Length: 148
Image 1 (cartoon, rainbow, N blue to C red):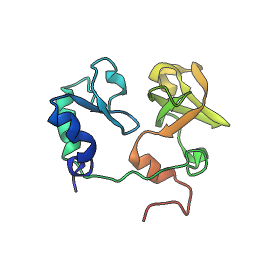
Image 2 (image 1 turned 120 degrees about the vertical axis):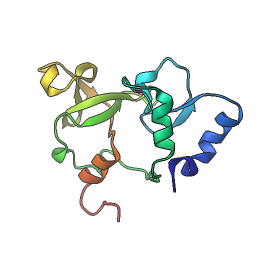
Image 3 (image 1 turned 90 degrees about the horizontal axis):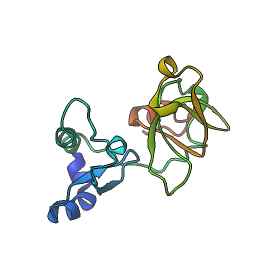
Image 4 (image 1 turned 180 degrees about the horizontal axis):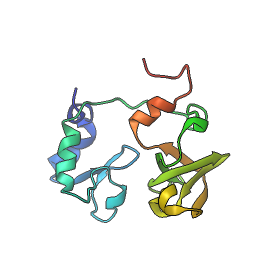
């Protein structure tokens, strides 16, 4: 099954109304306002977001499963600079950052920087943190919680 098939219920209302839509970093399908491009999975410096959207629509669908980010992920194994999504409130949009460490709460480098570019510039104490890439979720899930 392709992403367009697995997400048709979320996508179709926008398409039927001729409204441009986007996929947020957390996987939600929303109306594209054209102002929060950095929080859209289709954003690209090198090309058109329409091209990225088309690639996603035609790629293999992976059904999302609820993850308890505090307990299901082995944060001690997650390498520095791994892409994460962070926010401090359920009402905020997810922000794309790079993982620095997790010592109770998630720390990232400032403004999307990495350990190479950020040095000691860290944003600390994100209340909500999740891995951004599906392959990282599979890789760093605690043993016994892996997908079969």
